Amino acid sequence: MRKLALLVYMLVAFLYTQTTNAICIGRFYVFDFTTYHSYIYIVEPEPDLKQLEALGDKAGQNKNWELALKYYRQLVQARPDIANYHYKYGGALGMLAKESNKFKALGMIGEIKKSFETAIKLNRNHIEARYALVELYLELPGIVGGSERKAQQYALELLTISPLDGNLAKGRIAEYFKRYKQAESFYLQAHKIGNSKVTKQKLINLYKLTRQFDKLQNLG
Image (tube, rainbow, N blue to C red; front, side):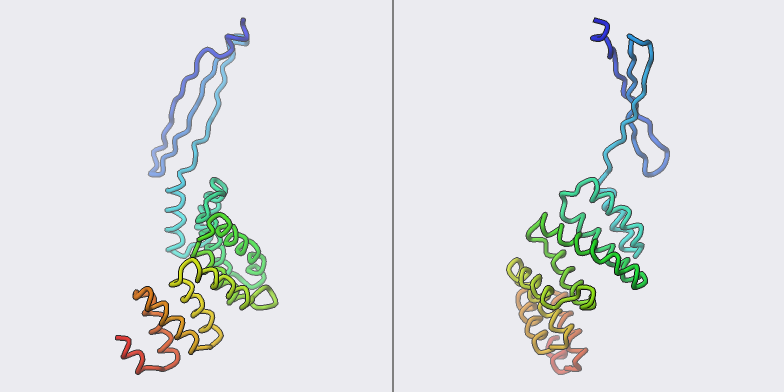
Protein backbone atom coordinates (compact mmCIF):
# COMPACT_ATOMS: atom_id res chain seq x y z
CA MET A 1 0.00 0.00 0.00
CA ARG A 2 2.86 2.33 0.79
CA LYS A 3 4.19 1.82 -2.74
CA LEU A 4 0.84 2.85 -4.11
CA ALA A 5 1.29 6.12 -2.30
CA LEU A 6 4.62 6.78 -3.95
CA LEU A 7 3.44 9.82 -5.87
CA VAL A 8 1.17 12.12 -3.95
CA TYR A 9 1.26 15.29 -5.93
CA MET A 10 2.91 16.96 -8.86
CA LEU A 11 3.30 20.70 -9.09
CA VAL A 12 4.25 22.35 -12.33
CA ALA A 13 5.95 25.74 -12.12
CA PHE A 14 7.24 27.79 -14.98
CA LEU A 15 10.30 30.03 -14.86
CA TYR A 16 10.75 32.80 -17.36
CA THR A 17 13.92 34.58 -18.32
CA GLN A 18 13.93 38.33 -18.77
CA THR A 19 15.52 38.23 -22.22
CA THR A 20 13.68 38.85 -25.46
CA ASN A 21 14.08 35.17 -26.32
CA ALA A 22 12.50 33.95 -23.10
CA ILE A 23 12.48 30.17 -22.66
CA CYS A 24 10.04 28.37 -20.40
CA ILE A 25 11.32 25.39 -18.42
CA GLY A 26 8.94 23.09 -16.55
CA ARG A 27 9.91 21.95 -13.04
CA PHE A 28 8.11 18.91 -11.71
CA TYR A 29 8.21 18.50 -7.91
CA VAL A 30 7.55 14.96 -6.72
CA PHE A 31 7.38 13.91 -3.05
CA ASP A 32 8.00 10.28 -2.10
CA PHE A 33 6.31 9.47 1.21
CA THR A 34 8.09 6.11 1.46
CA THR A 35 11.47 7.81 1.83
CA TYR A 36 10.34 11.33 2.78
CA HIS A 37 12.45 12.77 0.00
CA SER A 38 11.44 15.22 -2.70
CA TYR A 39 12.78 15.23 -6.22
CA ILE A 40 12.92 17.86 -8.95
CA TYR A 41 12.77 16.88 -12.60
CA ILE A 42 13.65 19.47 -15.24
CA VAL A 43 11.81 19.08 -18.53
CA GLU A 44 13.32 20.91 -21.50
CA PRO A 45 10.74 22.58 -23.75
CA GLU A 46 10.24 21.61 -27.38
CA PRO A 47 12.23 23.91 -29.70
CA ASP A 48 10.26 26.66 -31.43
CA LEU A 49 10.74 25.52 -35.02
CA LYS A 50 9.32 28.64 -36.64
CA GLN A 51 11.60 30.84 -34.56
CA LEU A 52 14.65 28.69 -35.38
CA GLU A 53 13.84 28.80 -39.08
CA ALA A 54 13.35 32.58 -39.00
CA LEU A 55 16.69 33.01 -37.22
CA GLY A 56 18.40 30.75 -39.74
CA ASP A 57 16.85 32.64 -42.66
CA LYS A 58 17.93 35.98 -41.19
CA ALA A 59 21.49 34.72 -40.69
CA GLY A 60 21.48 33.52 -44.30
CA GLN A 61 20.30 36.91 -45.55
CA ASN A 62 23.22 38.44 -43.67
CA LYS A 63 25.55 35.82 -45.24
CA ASN A 64 26.46 34.51 -41.81
CA TRP A 65 26.51 30.91 -42.98
CA GLU A 66 27.97 29.36 -39.83
CA LEU A 67 25.18 30.87 -37.73
CA ALA A 68 22.58 29.84 -40.27
CA LEU A 69 23.94 26.28 -40.15
CA LYS A 70 23.61 26.26 -36.37
CA TYR A 71 19.87 26.98 -36.58
CA TYR A 72 19.18 24.74 -39.59
CA ARG A 73 21.05 21.87 -37.94
CA GLN A 74 18.71 22.14 -34.94
CA LEU A 75 15.73 22.04 -37.29
CA VAL A 76 17.01 18.90 -39.04
CA GLN A 77 17.67 17.23 -35.71
CA ALA A 78 14.25 18.17 -34.33
CA ARG A 79 12.28 17.24 -37.48
CA PRO A 80 14.32 15.06 -39.84
CA ASP A 81 11.11 14.33 -41.75
CA ILE A 82 10.74 17.85 -43.15
CA ALA A 83 12.30 18.22 -46.60
CA ASN A 84 12.80 21.97 -46.55
CA TYR A 85 14.94 21.83 -43.42
CA HIS A 86 17.40 19.52 -45.20
CA TYR A 87 17.35 21.78 -48.26
CA LYS A 88 18.13 24.91 -46.23
CA TYR A 89 20.85 23.13 -44.29
CA GLY A 90 22.46 21.93 -47.52
CA GLY A 91 22.16 25.39 -49.05
CA ALA A 92 23.85 27.10 -46.11
CA LEU A 93 26.58 24.47 -46.10
CA GLY A 94 27.11 24.98 -49.81
CA MET A 95 27.50 28.73 -49.39
CA LEU A 96 29.93 28.20 -46.53
CA ALA A 97 31.93 25.82 -48.74
CA LYS A 98 32.20 28.52 -51.42
CA GLU A 99 33.78 30.88 -48.90
CA SER A 100 36.13 28.23 -47.46
CA ASN A 101 39.48 27.04 -48.72
CA LYS A 102 39.45 24.23 -51.28
CA PHE A 103 40.47 21.47 -48.88
CA LYS A 104 37.77 22.34 -46.36
CA ALA A 105 35.19 22.71 -49.11
CA LEU A 106 35.98 19.25 -50.49
CA GLY A 107 35.14 17.73 -47.12
CA MET A 108 31.68 19.31 -47.26
CA ILE A 109 30.59 18.07 -50.69
CA GLY A 110 29.24 14.72 -49.50
CA GLU A 111 27.08 16.29 -46.81
CA ILE A 112 25.79 18.96 -49.20
CA LYS A 113 24.72 16.33 -51.74
CA LYS A 114 23.14 14.18 -49.05
CA SER A 115 21.11 17.11 -47.72
CA PHE A 116 19.63 17.95 -51.13
CA GLU A 117 19.03 14.29 -51.98
CA THR A 118 17.28 13.76 -48.64
CA ALA A 119 15.03 16.74 -49.34
CA ILE A 120 14.03 15.12 -52.65
CA LYS A 121 13.39 11.74 -51.00
CA LEU A 122 11.10 13.40 -48.47
CA ASN A 123 9.38 15.56 -51.09
CA ARG A 124 9.46 14.08 -54.58
CA ASN A 125 8.40 17.42 -56.07
CA HIS A 126 11.01 19.56 -54.33
CA ILE A 127 12.04 22.03 -57.05
CA GLU A 128 14.68 24.05 -55.19
CA ALA A 129 16.70 20.99 -54.11
CA ARG A 130 16.87 19.74 -57.69
CA TYR A 131 17.95 23.13 -58.99
CA ALA A 132 20.61 23.25 -56.28
CA LEU A 133 21.92 19.87 -57.44
CA VAL A 134 22.02 21.13 -61.04
CA GLU A 135 24.23 24.02 -59.88
CA LEU A 136 26.35 21.75 -57.72
CA TYR A 137 27.12 19.28 -60.50
CA LEU A 138 27.89 22.13 -62.91
CA GLU A 139 30.28 23.94 -60.61
CA LEU A 140 32.13 20.94 -59.20
CA PRO A 141 35.29 19.88 -61.07
CA GLY A 142 34.89 16.49 -62.70
CA ILE A 143 37.60 15.00 -60.52
CA VAL A 144 35.48 15.53 -57.40
CA GLY A 145 32.11 14.61 -58.84
CA GLY A 146 31.12 17.34 -61.28
CA SER A 147 28.97 15.94 -64.07
CA GLU A 148 26.89 17.45 -66.87
CA ARG A 149 25.05 14.14 -67.15
CA LYS A 150 23.86 14.34 -63.56
CA ALA A 151 22.97 18.01 -63.94
CA GLN A 152 20.89 17.12 -67.01
CA GLN A 153 19.22 14.30 -65.08
CA TYR A 154 17.91 16.71 -62.44
CA ALA A 155 16.95 19.25 -65.11
CA LEU A 156 14.83 16.58 -66.82
CA GLU A 157 13.17 15.75 -63.51
CA LEU A 158 12.41 19.45 -63.09
CA LEU A 159 10.94 19.54 -66.58
CA THR A 160 8.37 16.90 -65.62
CA ILE A 161 7.51 18.62 -62.33
CA SER A 162 7.54 22.22 -63.57
CA PRO A 163 8.12 23.04 -67.28
CA LEU A 164 9.06 26.59 -66.26
CA ASP A 165 11.80 25.53 -63.86
CA GLY A 166 12.90 22.70 -66.13
CA ASN A 167 13.50 25.07 -69.03
CA LEU A 168 15.37 27.48 -66.76
CA ALA A 169 17.59 24.63 -65.58
CA LYS A 170 18.21 23.38 -69.13
CA GLY A 171 19.02 26.93 -70.18
CA ARG A 172 21.42 27.33 -67.28
CA ILE A 173 23.30 24.16 -68.29
CA ALA A 174 23.50 25.24 -71.93
CA GLU A 175 24.72 28.71 -70.95
CA TYR A 176 27.33 27.26 -68.59
CA PHE A 177 28.83 25.24 -71.46
CA LYS A 178 28.57 28.25 -73.82
CA ARG A 179 25.92 26.70 -76.00
CA TYR A 180 24.23 30.04 -76.25
CA LYS A 181 21.73 29.22 -79.01
CA GLN A 182 20.37 26.35 -76.95
CA ALA A 183 20.33 28.51 -73.84
CA GLU A 184 18.32 31.18 -75.66
CA SER A 185 15.80 28.59 -76.84
CA PHE A 186 15.25 27.25 -73.32
CA TYR A 187 15.04 30.73 -71.78
CA LEU A 188 12.54 31.88 -74.43
CA GLN A 189 10.39 28.84 -73.66
CA ALA A 190 10.60 29.57 -69.93
CA HIS A 191 9.68 33.22 -70.56
CA LYS A 192 6.74 32.14 -72.72
CA ILE A 193 5.47 30.00 -69.83
CA GLY A 194 6.24 32.30 -66.91
CA ASN A 195 6.47 35.79 -68.41
CA SER A 196 8.06 37.00 -65.19
CA LYS A 197 10.91 39.28 -64.11
CA VAL A 198 13.04 36.20 -63.47
CA THR A 199 12.58 34.72 -66.95
CA LYS A 200 13.06 38.11 -68.59
CA GLN A 201 16.25 38.73 -66.63
CA LYS A 202 17.69 35.41 -67.83
CA LEU A 203 17.28 36.59 -71.42
CA ILE A 204 18.64 40.06 -70.64
CA ASN A 205 21.76 38.56 -69.07
CA LEU A 206 22.26 36.20 -72.00
CA TYR A 207 21.85 38.92 -74.63
CA LYS A 208 24.28 41.17 -72.78
CA LEU A 209 26.78 38.33 -72.51
CA THR A 210 26.54 37.52 -76.22
CA ARG A 211 26.29 41.21 -77.22
CA GLN A 212 22.98 40.73 -79.00
CA PHE A 213 21.82 44.25 -78.29
CA ASP A 214 19.17 44.25 -81.02
CA LYS A 215 17.36 41.37 -79.28
CA LEU A 216 17.83 43.16 -75.98
CA GLN A 217 15.98 46.19 -77.35
CA ASN A 218 13.20 44.06 -78.82
CA LEU A 219 12.74 42.36 -75.47
CA GLY A 220 11.59 45.70 -74.04
